Length: 82
Image (tube, rainbow, N blue to C red; front, side, top):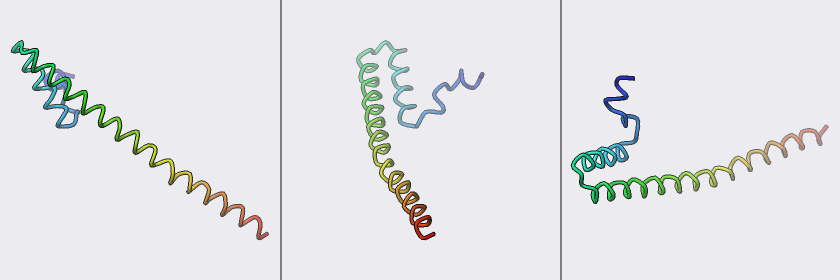
């Protein structure tokens, strides 16, 4: 728990960790324009990551569907032969 207070963003990917760290430094220096820029960069990165995840989920449904159809056809052929 103590380590989490020292480095709260340790488990984030490198890019996000650097952006949040930079935003924190800018905030402490009261440079709100730079804070806004860093937050927008982080938001764009998260939106992009979310879009990649959605695309991956859509692509992974097709092989699963084909595998299920293949299993059903194999079982049907096995019973049909008997």
